[in-house]
Amino acid sequence: QVQAVESGGGLVQPGGSLRLSCAASGSIFSIRDMGWYRRGPGKGRELVATITSGGRTNYADSVKGRFTISRDNAKDTVYLQMNSLKPEDTAIYYCNVNTLNSDFVRIESWGQGTQVTISS
Image (cartoon, rainbow, N blue to C red; front, side, top):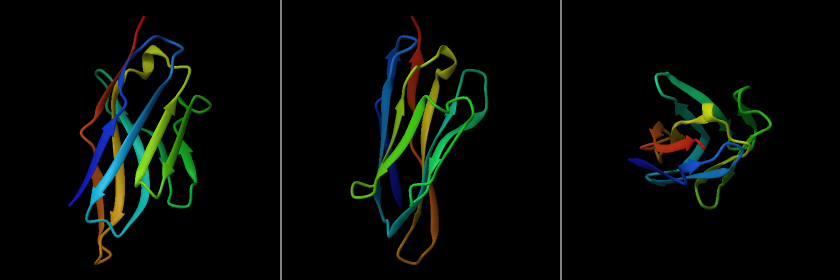
């Protein structure tokens, strides 16, 4: 089993910043892609950003230039630095981790979600 635990959500004013973290643990042989998704009020889940094991990143158009995804492979942790936050960024943010176990079986894991609220 693999666990993904997020932290760093909260309430911030428009224009502010937040940094989310997600640490993976458990039966991990290697970690492949990691990413962040979100579900806003009354909306479906949408991709925010992903990062490959080699560091290649991909962003939703709505967050390009404002959000930065990064990872620390030594800590099995992925981060999401969010700047210039807007009310429409309000959502529950979920961490997504794709791992291989010792049998080279791919396992996809999701965090429990962390609330991000942008409001004055």
